[in-house]
Image 1 (tube, one colour):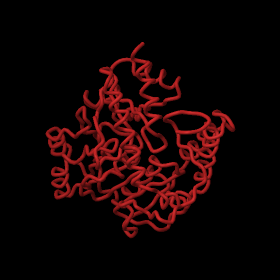
Image 2 (tube, one colour):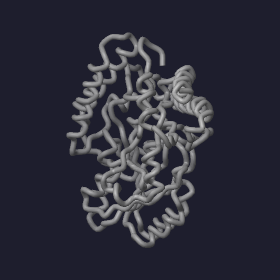
Image 3 (cartoon, helix red, strand yellow):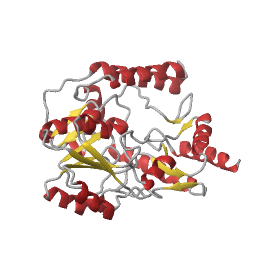
Length: 359
């Protein structure tokens, strides 16, 4: 990350762009527009699917390690929601999962991979069996949409594109097409304003952190106030046509592997995925830290590095999750390795980590 100021992590920044003529829309999940809906945000995707399915379904099985925005639409629609357990490497515990399917008898099963790695593939056979029994399978590919491993056979696939790129909005549903949605221009404009203010601050030193953070807060408040689904903005759709996917994927993969090698020197840091392979496009670099996670996070932030605790345990699962899933929530911490950064940035992050543990 080159410029006047430096940080790794936190919110996206963006300047104006010129879509390159030699790049096309290379997102495989939206290749067939007749069976895809492009949305402003992914928050409304599950709601739209539940609306289409109708009210005869009442039980949903979801990962115990997930975001509240995955669970909330089911609860709002009156579903009984139960979480299924994951092991330490974020794979589904197949034996426990099979028993839970038989006992709970879900109408819908939602799965999602983690951090760009194939954590769902081992469950593909049992999910095929569930589909054959009439259970609806939804896959959330938010964290794996750019990876190239074999997809499971889901009835619906959803994902938040905006989490990967400096765009104000963008999400998708594969498995249904809705053409009458309108753009949320106010939200897109608010996000663009915030990202451009941040870009000026880091590229030229113009402005200040409080200003762009206020802009981001205003945009998030606007997002939280939305109750109706909207289509993706024309700004974001144009940006997607300019995506050099090969360069984007290679940058993330190289950043991941460089930082993972440096972090592996510290016994206090447990890598969940030791290496990103050719088919993997990392979303974040997740680790487990058993002791003083909050202190470590504060130390990194004091040096302008912002590893994130990706999710707080949703209230609906707080008192019912298994101990293994609880340990995931309590220990996980995620480093940013995305295309904003270069090898020099990852090495600088690693030096700061070294300095923490040397003390």
